[in-house]
Image (cartoon, rainbow, N blue to C red; front, side, top):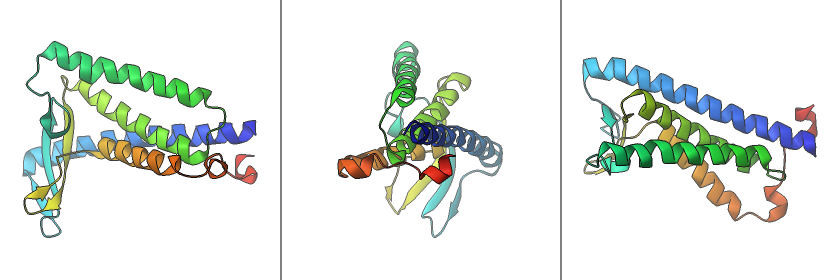
Length: 175
């Protein structure tokens, strides 16, 4: 059983590290390409690439708040939450692979956005927008996508019977 848990945790941490890497690479690409070329639209305007640096959260909520408040709520608070999440993941004793993978996605997305805030003067780089006509999402990034996907997986797996939730990677994969 301990091998399963260790393998599940390693997969979750690999997912987190992959999320951070992909997020940071795509943000650098977005900055270098979209600052020069401007916004771009694809698939009958369903997908838009539009570079922005957001000092707030979704829909720029909090962007006009004092810098000290944004620092506490958008940098220090999330850093503490991510530290607690990592400790929880490391100490989880009977979590299935889906649960830990979901937590890994949330951790990776959170770290990706936290890195932006630390290295971009409290701002997060966003560049993706989806929708039809006036019905559009907020501008977001891959870190936001990882966090959302992780939360959806957590929600779905929370409704599974206990026997299905603690399933692990088959033994042959963990040896």
